[in-house]
Length: 499
Length: 128
Image (cartoon, rainbow over all chains, first blue to last red; front, side, top):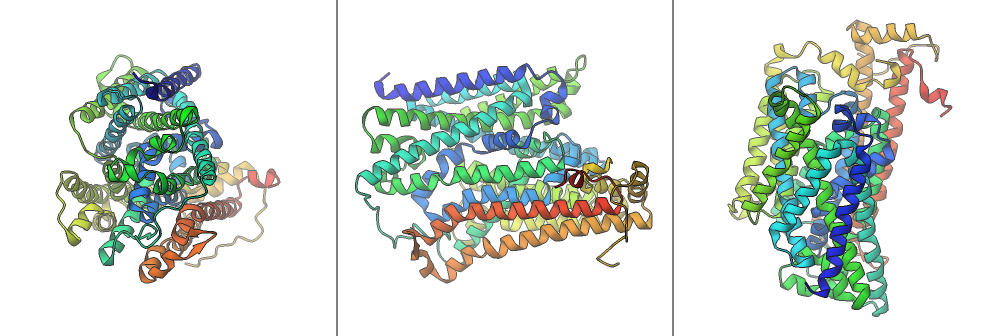
């Protein structure tokens, strides 16, 4: 081990210890099944919003965005904008009704709304699929970060993150994870903001050198030229704006609010916290234009945030800042994979392991489900290589936007949705968006329009899913659930009416 | 069916029994309950649609605007190129403003509905 590895190692050890300590502290409050799943629905908006921010800001936000902005320029700003604005769409269309539905998970919601076990099973399958797709790049990113920070082999980072996540999730469940996630939001913000402030001061002291001038399209907010560039940008916007509400680890957090009123307050605070965070990646990208062109030429822009401090500062200052950003990156992997593990194991517990662990339902079944939820994507991350953080995350958003978004929006606002219509729409959206993205990941990339339609499917797959869901529902109007009206009343009436 | 449904002079704080019976109208699919629910759903959905439309004509037209008028890309305000200023900084307070206005309006709609079915109204009791 060299001296250069020390700050990264200290950071990783400290974050791991703090995460485990807070998780153990939370364990003292975590006793019943409801505690494990949704923290007994007593989490206040401020704490809950910090926790949502903590688990939402993944490796893609902490490391990926700055690198994408450095290489791709202003059209990549749609990623942070979409990841934030997705919460506005969620607030407007689903936040309060979703909380009032009284369901634990997305499959619970689907079953309660449509009274169909088949739709429930389809949703469970989608939650697990989207969750695992999102977890694989987190574990891979952890490996890459540990290699860059302390020179560890890539499998080591994946295993460390998986082990800490598993320890936390199985010991305390949602309640302790709420504390851990809230802590990690503020850690990530500090780890991004403080180095950015110091580095801007350094840049100022250097006489404010400018990067390459304009004219190379770095400030163009549209991806490429012509109709294809415009389509790609709008399709990305559609997927990100609409996909947020369908991410299982986001949705499960809304069930931990005390009521619909608090669910709206929580969403508002989330918007503020995400905005505060996303102010800083562009600063890294702009400084990277001046000091980090070596990373671009070497094709390692993903580690811009990790390596910029040492590129600009020598000695102890650079070491301390490197330790700080490494801690933030590590927290990003831990918190996102914890949130996803909770969501996936919640679904697995209710639909699979509760049936296997017959003698003691509840908590033991949840622990077994958590093992499965973490081990499968870790093994996949170790076996599969080069899936790519940005592509996997984009795939998860596009699939969520094309499946759960239509289901939630129509289920909450449209009485005539039927189980057959929901199934047909989920299939159309899932096969459309999922198929397109899998083809892209498998390396199938034709040029021109076909390539753009496959690489960014949301702009066509979301409308197709909505149309299929609505048309088939109208065609099967006799299957409209008899309790649909009563359910909509519950979703939209304030709790103060004592439903 | 008319958009506006107003019951003249419902007492703002009625007994729990009466609140239950009005909400009972909504639950039991009487014609009156139908009107109540439709009015709330329509008000909330209209609010959501207006807000999303506002998002579409502000944030949503930016790619088209920069595509049609590329010279905008090199406009600088406070030394920052316009796209970075808009999408990197100003978008965040804008989204917050939209969210704040939405929450106020949505809860106003719910209060109107609560008054309509005569339920107790914690917002007013708080003096808010």
